[in-house]
Amino acid sequence: MELSENALKVIRARYLIKNENGDVIETPDDMFRRVARTIALVEDLYGGNHNEWDEKFYAVLSDLKFLPNSPTLMNAGKDTGQLAACFVLPVADSMNSIFDTLKNAALILQSGGGTGFSFSQLRPKSDIVRSTGGIASGPVSFMRIYNTATEVIKQGGARRGANMGILRVDHPDILEFIRIKRSKGELTNFNISVAVTDAFLEALGKDEEYDLVNPRNNSISGRLKAKVVFSEIVTSAWETGDPGIIFIDRINRANPTPHIGAMESTNPCGEQPLLPYEACILGSINLSKYIKGAEYRNPGIDYDSLFRDINTAVRFLDNSIDANRYPVPAIEKMHKGNRKIGLGVMGWADMLTLLGMPYNHKTAFRLAKDLMRFVSETARQASVKLAEARGVFPNIKGSVYDGPGMPRVRNATTTTIAPTGTLSIIADCSSGIEPLFALAYKRLVLDSELYEINKYFFEMAKNKGFYSDELREKVTTKGCLRGIKEVPDKIRRLFKTAHEIPTEDHIEMQACFQEYTDNAVSKTINMPYRSKKEDVTKAFLLAYEKGCKGITVFRYGTAKKGTLVRFSDTD
Image 1 (spheres, rainbow, N blue to C red):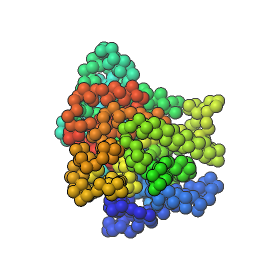
Image 2: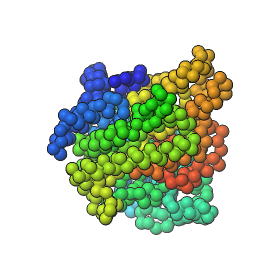
Image 3: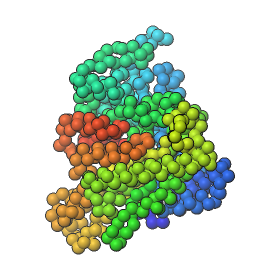
Image 4: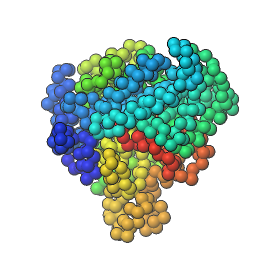
């Protein structure tokens, strides 16, 4: 097992078991053994051989070919035992519901999970509260209470709290919600997204007004010009990175269990739409480990190994549902009813580099579809095999799988593309499906400064004979190859960084992966500081046109407070 210096720092700080004095009492190898053993013991429930699967799980973990979401690495085999990263909790229009949900969120955050909420059911500000004769304070006021509570909860001693707050675009308080992050220090523990409807987008296209609906009684309480509201969304996103947009009707058209309920919210990074009280356990395959033939200058993808390890990963994630110790009984019932898992990928930019493909070349887009189709089909078939041995997910009757010719699956969903911020540090690979952020940069993780440097570029520079100490100095200072003339054009194109890639190509890559992903795709649409509001407008509309389920833009150098959890802290 080869772990980078940064990987060791992160693992020691966040994942290894500590004693009462805060001293680390296990090694990274012990951690992988602990996780593999805990998840393999579930085999006993189904007549399997837990020793056999203990070794198989340990092999993919310690080889850094597959890693589950952070709570699994932190909590498997411990008293807490909470293994899921993603949760959505309902917020109904009553004080009991609002504060019961806050209590449940506290338990989840403390265990290392991230929570998503839709505040769309809460009556708007200044509406009547008949039980008291007073007036309502509105969704944003309660979001502030949730934000303050999150601030004081130390997330299992390892991670800060992370929330997603969502409001439908037809809620009467939508403008207050859209503008909230423009004020410094507001909702710093929240990412926020507007749930945009098809009706709103239709009104936008026709330059018309649309109805605002009071959720207290579903009455129409007013109308707004769609272009005015959209302009406010664009302005806030341009200034702060928030709000993002989720296309809520598209998400619900892809809901595999509509008979159980409708989707209202996602997890904090937006890649996992979930029903109220639903959870999901995620994991990611490290694509940089599946390149063969590179030493012979004829690299290709080792699909045989990838096929085998996807099957192992799906079994691991399905076992994790049974191994999980749920903080709230209603969540356990929902998760075991639908058995959603989310297998995704990381190291995508590294794979492209090793294959000699620039990130935003048409061959890379084509490969993204082909590769994710392979991951999706393999994962789905693995779920079918598990269903044959263990049974289908309990809520399958009435689901999209309940019909002639439909696969009998163990899991209502199998694929999700997560951001893998800290997991990619452990695996020493590029994060999720993102391009390279920079060839050299500093990042802050748990108050520790980590210096990241791209190993592939400097290896290539040495192999191709253009390496020099002067070049290393230039690249580490600048972070990219733009304007460094001693680097051949072909290599410069291969190592384009996130801010050198046009917005439409970021969105194209997200759309390519979304086409073959059950859930959604975490992808930050990086924009240069000089980008105009019109560029954000085009990005939002292009994401809808291309079939994405949501979009987040981030303009370099703008206010970051409260947006960083999108990138690094909730995998």
